Length: 330
Image (cartoon, rainbow, N blue to C red; front, side):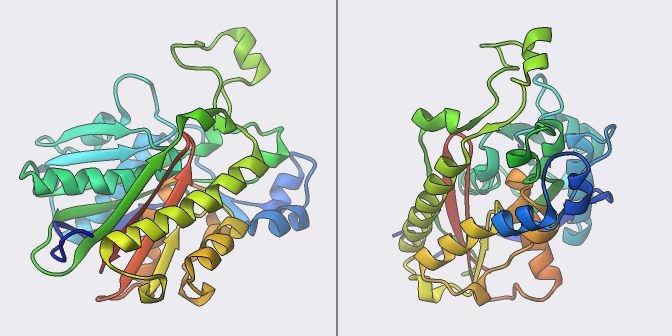
């Protein structure tokens, strides 16, 4: 168990969601599916999809401007930009550097994290480390995902799950009892091919043949991913709570990765947290990969659900396989 004195805290949150709403009825015109089929298996009713010319960096920059305005910080006040994304605009340079340029954060160091759906929580812990080491005062942690650009729109088992969006937060030094009080992260690369994109990197560069075969798009073994997601998110929650010196009954609000409703409900049940203490918006946005938790944090604050003094558990699971949980005293 760590010290009771937090090293870092989230001081502000922000988000950006593309205006285009795509409903399950809209998807019925694209693939062989129905609203009943999607809702029954995932809980998703609609999602936001970015326009073709809207980039991951642009969405991340919009979320960044939102959070900086709420924090009363200017671009030059930012020391570090950590971007979580599974959908970088290009492989070189990092999309974090593109966000830096778009927001004018001339004094910041910027880099990407490739933790897939767990990436925002990895970014929080990275920010905590920089602050604890005295290397940064104002850290901008961004998660921006254009999942619509990497899904196979002919595969009804995956294309119905995902949406686009961006969330962000400012992390600063904690000066009291508020802040990050427990963490746990894990990964298992042996299970990488349960959720991955086969081609498009240096091992298998994109070719006309691989593009035609759709090997640059997301492939997922849904049943296996579900099984590992529930187990890993439950374990991460328990270990992060142990690190914080808390039990499931001490949690005031659970904000899980919004993958699908069945995973959310199973994770809450195994963690001993009733659903009336769980924040859910997967029905409106689908799975936005690492952007789900920061968007949910910002909405929970805006709606008055997340309040000062609460013990908040955040937990995620994603490709890698990766998983993690962070406990925050708000």
